[in-house]
Length: 253
Ligand SMILES: CCCCCCCC/C=C\C=C\CC(=O)SCCNC(=O)CCNC(=O)[C@H](O)C(C)(C)COP(=O)(O)OP(=O)(O)OC[C@H]1O[C@@H](n2cnc3c(N)ncnc32)[C@H](O)[C@@H]1OP(=O)(O)O
Image (cartoon, rainbow, N blue to C red; front, top):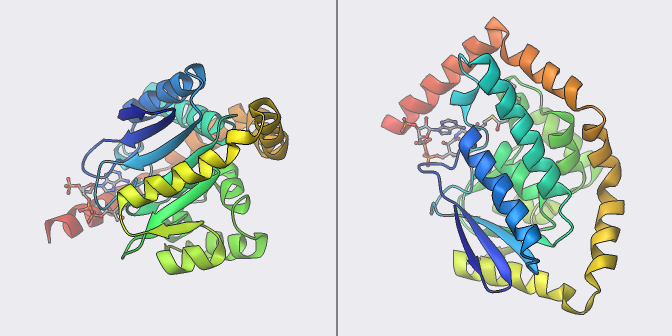
């Protein structure tokens, strides 16, 4: 992860090849978010070092034949990452410079503003298409971004939106021709708050988001148990094995 700081922190996800979210990356993200808060940055922009993938979502290897202690820590660290990002009092934006499936879409929709590169990229919560259920807080992040009806259809169909579709439905706010332009547009969004007192801004955001945050905070143990029960089911392990094989086969073509 690299952080440039000119008052606005640009945080670059840098875990080749596809920025899949494993325990180490999630821990690094959490430490970085804490630093951004401590340094009193004006805001934070999340982007990717990959030219084609923002993030491929959760690292499936963390869930396939998992070590019991590690997979639990993995999930709790993912919850922490979401609580910190969705609940950040500082302004957040995502410069989405590539594909953003599942957990990649979760990161983007946890931010307040999204700029995505024009091109053949897709974004969405595709969990149902993989035969799994997007956790409540994944669903809430989408519902917080696009109208409820479109969110329900997208979630139940596991829809991956093209850039044009994402713009039309409001899943992204703007498009950009390249990464530099996407970062500039995110900076422009964050600079809108230059004349707004930061305490009032931060508290307003937290009040606006508190219902959704509270749902996970009061349900963390049940959410973790639900995930662990699901991931340890033989049928789920079988699906993960098939999905990994499919991804490998595709990457070797
Ligand atoms: C299926 C049942 C799951 C049951 C889980 C239990 C409950 C879980 C609850 C919550 C779920 C959370 C949601 C998630 O985030 S799950 C992850 C979903 N992510 C995806 O479906 C994306 C998969 N990846 C892709 O579609 C593509 O890789 C893409 C991001 C579009 C990039 O394409 P491309 O640039 O062509 O790269 P490759 O496909 O060639 O991939 C390069 C190597 O990276 C490996 N890879 C890709 N994605 C993942 C991943 N999410 N986790 C781990 N590894 C991944 C891929 O296999 C290639 O590896 P190699 O080079 O060794 O062959």
